[in-house]
Amino acid sequence: MSADPEQHMVLAVSTVIFSLRPHPDTGEFTLWLPLVRRIRDPFKKRWALPGGPLDNTQDLAEAAKSTMHRTTQVQPRHLEQLYAFGDVDRSPDAPERVVSIVYWALVRQDEDLQVVDAENVEWHPVEEIPSPLAFDHDLIIRYAVDRLRAKVTYSPIAHAFLPEEFSLADLRRVYEAILNRALDPSNFRRQILSQGTVEDTGRRMTGTAHRPPKLYRSAPKSSRYALTIEETP
Amino acid sequence: MSADPEQHMVLAVSTVIFSLRPHPDTGEFTLWLPLVRRIRDPFKKRWALPGGPLDNTQDLAEAAKSTMHRTTQVQPRHLEQLYAFGDVDRSPDAPERVVSIVYWALVRQDEDLQVVDAENVEWHPVEEIPSPLAFDHDLIIRYAVDRLRAKVTYSPIAHAFLPEEFSLADLRRVYEAILNRALDPSNFRRQILSQGTVEDTGRRMTGTAHRPPKLYRSAPKSSRYALTIEETP
DNA sequence: GGACTTGTGGTCAGGTCAACCTGAAGGTTG
DNA sequence: CAACCTTCAGGTTGACCTGACCACAAGTCC
Image (cartoon, rainbow over all chains, first blue to last red; front, side, top):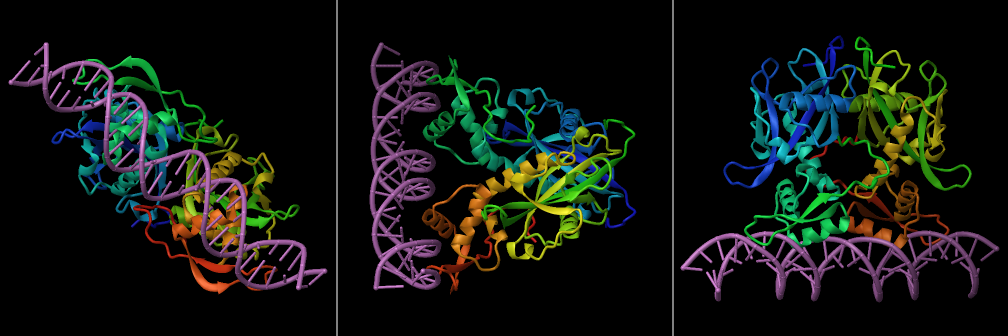
């Protein structure tokens, strides 16, 4: 247990990095995220979220970004603070008490492809996490997925998964992967267009085996929200 | 400035405590919150949110609750983590870097009335905050109010302001105070009843100068949300 | 009793959303 | 080449939600 008053306290940053890739078996798009295999106790050899102690010269979001880049070489597209986890007993057997400020991020599909798995870093489909993870990281991931699902329904963050230009069907497949259910193409189209978060590029995709779809880009954000603390690098 | 790598880092808890009281001038209900006058540098004599360093043996929420009780004698009814503020330059002139995990809470009207203002603690209407506050506390309050406004529209937290039994008009006045606009009594009634968060006690208020309203109590929470990290003491 | 105030219940028009339908525009296949 | 298949693009319909408004209920106050 960790209730020794004399014990050292550590402030750390953990990161949940979402990417979108086809599942190797089914070919369906699903969420993936990188895990790091721990090489020391506690939880030696268990998988864990990328993270590290907070550097005294970095803002929290900076620290999250550099942790992400250091472990996975990705540049997050959407970055947002999730929660601060700090229960006393969340790191049993650890020599020190750890308070983790968790950030979650979305990375773009095309950038993601350049990624080569480093040693002790592996990407996993979010429904096939090698549980139990170290610490309370299973809980953190569940919470992050819930937040992503909720947020995608009222905020245009899904664009962050896609490259510069995309068809509405691409965007719909992103939503379907996140929400894990099929969406009516026609209704989806109407909703997205009505909210004004995408704009027509005037061009169409070529080489499709069917009617070529229009290409869109995400519209420059109008300041929709009065106040936002989220960072979007 | 605070970018000295050798500098000490402190993990603190700050709290935004919302209460509902009539405004002394207009008699309209508005949000109030307690502030503490700082007695030492930095920001000596400025008003600040109640808070304190995180004790090594306490969970974050516990620490928030004990800070609230210590400074204001209130027992929060709804308690929720707001955000972790940790930019390097948020405490200029402070001898150490401070990362603050902020909680916000709602306290019940009737409990609130027992409160006697301690020295250096004062309650203020939320639109009449004595700005500028210490540190980034103005920003924190704005953020907390935004969150409260948003949350009240999709979650039955407003009940936390009211005593055990209340009329729908009482509840409506709470919503009106938070959202800062008038609501149609009839439509409000329909919405609240349809969401099933209150139940009829079978009794009516007495001694009113008009038709006596029914009394309701808040319904036992069904597990509406799949996953919640919020604490409601 | 009559005026007044607030609670309670209902109607109605407009908007939103999911389910469904139809045609357009390409490639694919015999 | 012609028939066909797939996906995009756009429209229609009905269920439901919401806000504005109306009418009555049930007390107190003068």
